[in-house]
Length: 155
Image 1: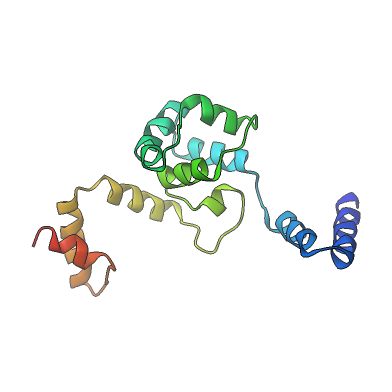
Image 2: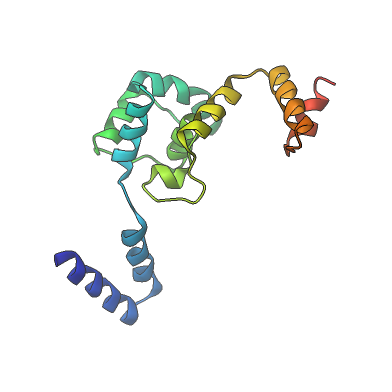
């Protein structure tokens, strides 16, 4: 009942006030799980420690110019602080998920566990192995957008 009253209250404010309140209204409705829960959940599913995640983040963090230590990750998981937009991008890239999913939104492009596993395997491949995989997929009628770039390196 309290949630219903809160939603009605926000909606009434949105009708009278600026569109900012409408955005808040839809964010409240669309968010499924909080960031802290999603981060802890994916780490648990993949058996990743905070130290592991920190190491996974390093290449992305270096590129983005942000620091990502296990202490930062601990603060994120415990809700002590929230990541900056760049730190969120680093975490999402290291985990192979979208920033929106990590923030708790349900996204149409959310990957299944099998797709995440394939993506992780792809990321571990050398450029030559990626070229071979791209060629095999091409033989089966699957076109990869990056195929020409990948294949041209080792043609």
